[in-house]
Image (tube, rainbow, N blue to C red; front, side, top):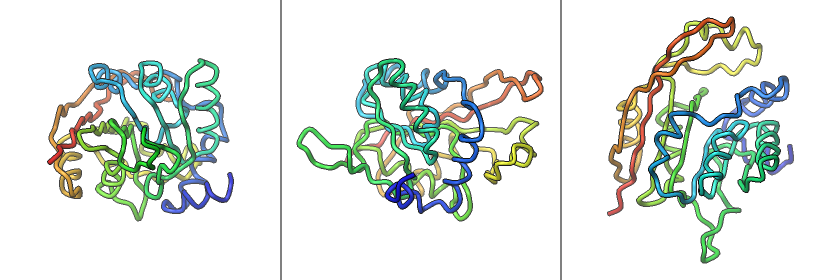
Length: 236
């Protein structure tokens, strides 16, 4: 990781090393398929500029690019970003990936048609299963992510409404020491955090719990609920 990348990630102490250790210490972690809740939420939207915060190995960004979006993904892990870049290239997909922490990142490489640098210039910003770490709070995290939404743009948050029964000792068993806060999330709760900390106006497009079937580490089947919030930034 280069010095500029390290500096860009300075806002989340220890998270860079922890996430990099998790990705670099294993084969690809995720399936390579897009999040089903994301596909359902986004399919009816007009493609534009989209930012995926915490993009991991890039499956969602690649799907969005394949469906007409000008797609960018950021993640704390260099290994995750490398894998995402390689996966996009293997599919012949044009997408941008960058090692960055949303709390400090400024998309200086993203330019408008007029050539101006744009922060808060994304038509859609996505946060799937974002975790907080002290000293962060979820309200701060939601606020940081929402800052990148353009006027009249949208924010999509997909979160664990509940954690699987095998997750209690997940960090200790894997040994990656990420120390996530596994507090249940609701779509209305996320919306309350969004409007409580944002200087702009928002409205809910939809807020729902979505059930999905999963398989545990020992092959046990389970059903989990995800919190799905799509919020629209209202222009004055």
